[in-house]
Image 1 (cartoon, helix red, strand yellow):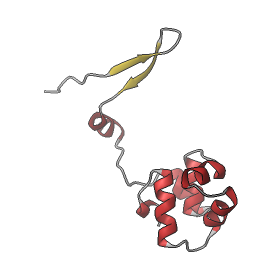
Image 2 (image 1 turned 180 degrees about the horizontal axis):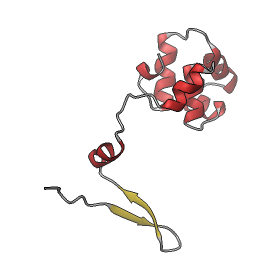
Image 3 (image 1 turned 45 degrees about the vertical axis):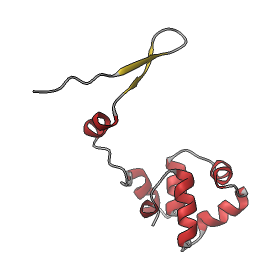
Length: 107
């Protein structure tokens, strides 16, 4: 027997349904989402030569300036981190936190 799931519908300014809030467990069941995974688009960008940091940043549709602001550094400093061949573990931890990722997703 399937239990009924209660979704919350949010309406827009026009009074029409705009969003649905889904319980997290139901979201995971419906999408197969698993925290800590790496999307195909990120892997593909890395195969094409992008660093893991750049691939994730672009996947999340963030600019270098936005990530730098989250980290409290300049855009130029972040740009150097993004192209580093072998970023330090501390760098990966800071970037992962700014992007809302686990360090293992950047390693």
